[in-house]
Picture 1 (cartoon, rainbow, N blue to C red):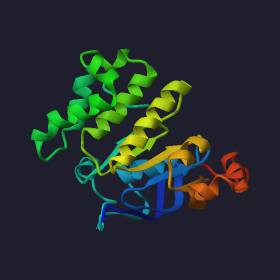
Picture 2: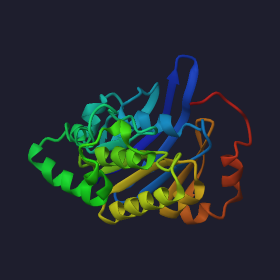
Picture 3: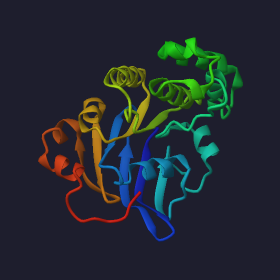
Picture 4: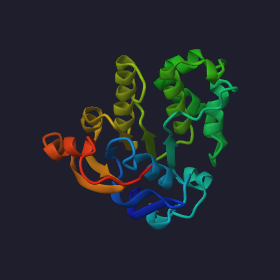
Length: 243
């Protein structure tokens, strides 16, 4: 079973706390949202799962295997991919070169052509821009490229960090339609979002983070009606340095 389990995750940057106690589960085929205001710990949690930061304590288990100490390239090879906040593209390389880098972890390089076809079918704009430098793309096109690059590793679980941030409403709508389509094809999604309505519309289950901890969790349908979600989202309560 392709299940992700995070237990009592703590991440520190010297004396600064990234997250202090995060526990969550992502079941195969589900969409799980991490909600919370800026600084609640969403990005740090995703980065820890992706192997980009090392947990100070706690466990991260994927498909029954502890991955907390594995480097990022090995975690990608096991079927987890992250589309990061801010895109982190190679701006002096073309769209196609960025996508090809996403496929570098594939055990079967013969799959690359089919994955290009899949990404270009999902994002026709990228096909039109395939020879264009990533640094010349619009914000919406860069977000498409970041998601497409993650998909080139053929993940079982796709993580997205603030996919709607800074994008025009029409682009956000297109992006979320694509995420719905990917989920319909069987891809498991874990996304961090500040936009509560967007996240709860697509998610099956959500965890609301506050000051580096899980303050509330439940089925997305239930959390839509929960007044505490808005209180936590607005950052009410005790303050603590988090990333």
